[in-house]
Image 1 (cartoon, one colour):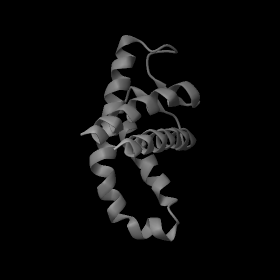
Image 2: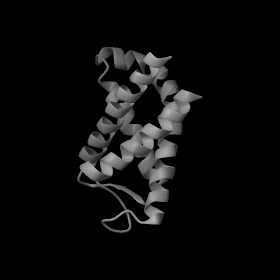
Image 3: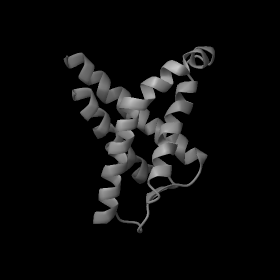
Length: 123
């Protein structure tokens, strides 16, 4: 249960950092995050956390031979696909191009790696 909640928190925080740091990532509605934008950010982050918790492990098992052949680099493609799915589900979330998806997934991966690794040490 803790891991599930941490995945949602990482999704929300990762998308927020991507909006702040990555050019081409925004929530529609202008420069500032409005109340609707914050709501969209929380929903999109929660959906990203749900996808990372439920769907990503299944995809990682299916693509294990490919990840093994590429020495784990295909995991980045999987992360990018998860972010892209969230971008498709939420039209208010604007991720302009492939490089923006790459940097967004890299930010989320770094957050996930650092936060969930620290949480695993506590257990």
